[in-house]
Image (cartoon, rainbow, N blue to C red):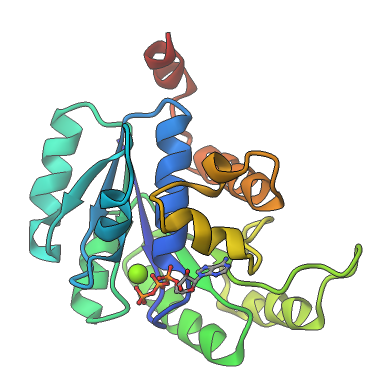
Length: 221
Ligand SMILES: Nc1ncnc2c1ncn2[C@@H]1O[C@H](COP(=O)(O)OP(=O)(O)OP(=O)(O)O)[C@@H](O)[C@H]1O
Ligand SMILES: [Mg+2]
């Protein structure tokens, strides 16, 4: 089983929105998926409760239960565990980072988010974990032109010493609309630009995790 921790110490960066969309991309892609919500705010759990029909298994737990929940998930042959984390405290975030094969550092293209990601990058490095930065709520391109804020953010993030994912999430109303119904952006509108960015991002992360394509194929038949 591969474990992915979605983190940012800045509140509202888009951790839950990303966790939900990635968990659904994984589930709909045929991987046996668990979404662990260790945030006492329970936003991911609220979203999953709004969902009708099958979806990823929800584990509504505190950080102290993560190790045990992960062991059970491995025993029960889950392929993927996604962890939606709180902005604080650090100790809970560290538990998630320690459990992860890959940490996804969520970052809006703003000065304060970038400063916060620099500190998270330090924690991830200290704990010896692989990580990737995903830009979130970025202003959309104007034609082919990348907004200056995004260009500057990508430049500044180079100093964190972690890779920035080749595709991020733009600020789009569909992320808010779909999540209110427990749906991914792809389920809401499969032809939308948001669906394309989530699909490309999931493919990128799955490749980083070297997720077993054969396991997925075997389950899909
Ligand atoms: N790409 C996006 N486009 C538009 N709105 C977004 C996007 N990502 C997140 N939002 C909105 O921003 C707000 C915060 O998002 P979210 O709850 O996912 O962040 P969070 O990092 O999980 O917050 P917290 O730190 O409180 O857990 C929500 O209202 C959400 O709908
Ligand atoms: Mg959240």
